[in-house]
Amino acid sequence: HKEGHWVATFGVNTATPRDWTRDEVTLVQETAEHMWSAAERASTEAVLREHAQRLPVVLHATAAGSWTRNIGASSADWDEGFRQLYGFAPPQPATLRAWRGRVHREDRPIVLTLVDDSRQPTSDSWDKTFRIVRPDGTIAWIQSVGRIERDVAGGIRRLAGLELDVTARHEAQNRDLKVLLETAAQGILSVDGKGTIVTANRALETMFGWQPGELIGQPLERLLPSAFHQIHEQ
Image (cartoon, rainbow, N blue to C red):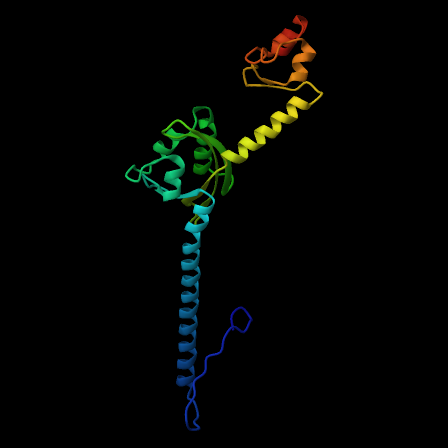
């Protein structure tokens, strides 16, 4: 019985009637316990082997890559899918610096935040999307998901992540967004952190009397009356 539930039966038989001594009963009980432990261990190992066989198939089917890094280690462990995803040759050392060098310059703050969060995590998991630049110059969108493994004392023992190429999905979302913006009757624009116009749909250009594309790169103040410039800056 385990935790109040019957899980298995182990029996010992003789060809003739006999009275079992206390030591013999104890021996049978101990043998049963050892056999149960061995059976549990064998079952766990079988499940792990099955998962290990399935994982490469799943990763290949999803064009994904996995990685692990033990805390204190100078390098990580990248599987073949990860190297293909980022464009790393097999002999290249699996270092944090090499990986970070593949990240798009504009998205590196996101990656740096992820690294900082892993040192002093507020959560034991993450899900970040950013761009990378492969050696041939192509840009891909990567979704990185993973977990932080801890030791019994609560300290970080290992990081494990899964990288997915979501470029096609991201491009499809952008196409849908572009169609939505261009067909909207409302004027819609977006600006960067410096107040520079990044996108402006046709409705907004018409509304303010600008030609297609002329607003891109302009400061947002160009759309405001001069009396509002100081208020906007504040």
